[in-house]
Length: 112
Image 1 (cartoon, rainbow, N blue to C red):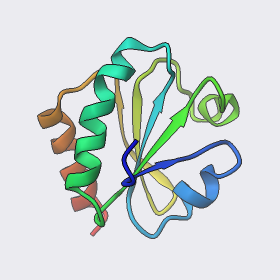
Image 2 (image 1 turned 90 degrees about the horizontal axis):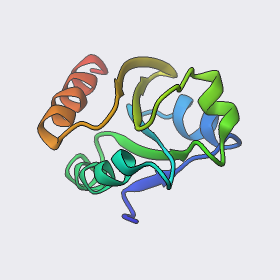
Image 3 (image 1 turned 120 degrees about the vertical axis):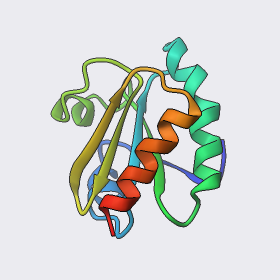
């Protein structure tokens, strides 16, 4: 996994995501989820492209059910964009790079 990705858990979610001074996008995924595995390299590539502008985090929903449940994750992959501790966008299901790039750019514009 890339060094531009942050692994978050139930225990670290608040500190790593909600209290971040940068916008954060969290990839809610599971190792058995084919669309999640297909999106992983795209997410990793975008994390390198936007390094320093936005935090890219991954949360395994099998291992961290409390956070996934609290946020109403019903299908994976789900990407949630946060700024100042608040959800500002949500993408459910597999998305290609260009579509994700538009969501990222929108989240960055909203966080200025």
